[in-house]
Image (cartoon, rainbow, N blue to C red):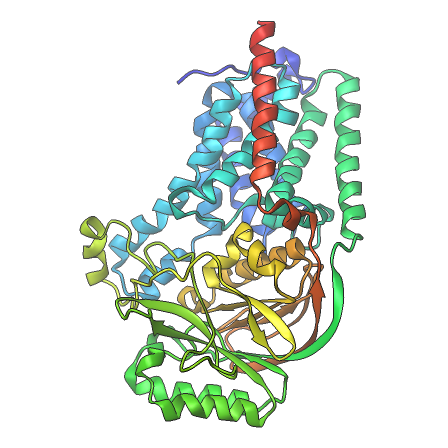
Length: 520
């Protein structure tokens, strides 16, 4: 595998500094330290400014040892993703009961896979026959954004830890979310890091000034965009009550815990007179069709008695009875016959809600306590649920990481809602990172997002992506608040997906690549 390398004499950073950085005792500690700091750019720390700085450090380091470019970036990304996503081990070992000698290697598989994408970016970077300045400031951000776009789709997709999420919602760069979604934010973030690095690497003052102006301009543009209101309140208001049951995962599917679990949620419904009450993912841990009708009626009657429309997470069999769905059911709707309106999860968690390659991987599940690991998909086009005076576009847990998949439902909705069960990840930062994804979805669509979770983070998020109220994690409580219904579309919704940004990026890269080849 060969690639072009940066020539030290082209950099103002100087031979002396490159020589120092190239020393193993300087290079590798700096590389690993910068990688381990990556999680501090994300929730719950929200040091959004840190990620462009760390990307700049990575870029400067790889110019000191260009012959190690791809391997260094792979190690950097592997370390960053391992620290960021270490909580997967909690789900596999602590909760599902997989022996540690299997849980650790399986936990490392995801970071090892995700690290391929940044490494591939830097390998492709060396294939462009253009100046180092163009490679760093234009080609690198475009390639990195395309790599993030690809990994959100490959092998059913994994959107967790996309670099743009680090800017949600306090950074000026978050202003790009309603314009082009999380990938436009990613592009601006990586470009900021590249321009920052080039301020040190560039030989000519003209290039430095250009990078400085670009850096300031993109952040100022983000501030301006964050002040724009692309959607409008539709004049409706509603009070919401979001239940947080705090049921331990070890007890959730235990038959002996069923009645106490149901009673806890009944008590929470009875504690509020909110117009909309939402219970979290699989709050009722039994198939809806297997529940005695009088028990289901108890939830409906209690909610109606308190003047509330009730939506609750409950699994149910598919209509043909051959599979089962992870669903949110509108209990207080006027049913058509015996069929209550529901939303069923469509984007399932690989290895959690469905088993890829069961012939080869099915044996793993004999080691784990993982009920309902074979859900069916609910369908890509599902209408919002009518709750009180709101049209609510639901998504369930993992789905909140895929903004493109929410656009169609959001365009018909006045309110967004996510229901989740993060008990799988214990007391880790997974729940705060998941909250940050919900903040991005609110920004992208210009609507309130409400979250009802089992253990956290139960929250109300306004259309600017700001958390206006939340519950303390790992407590049993009800979050009450008021929301406004919204209508209209953001530019991101008009585009319909992130594909236009991907095509533009590919086109620009093609032009730069061909132009560079023609010059040589």
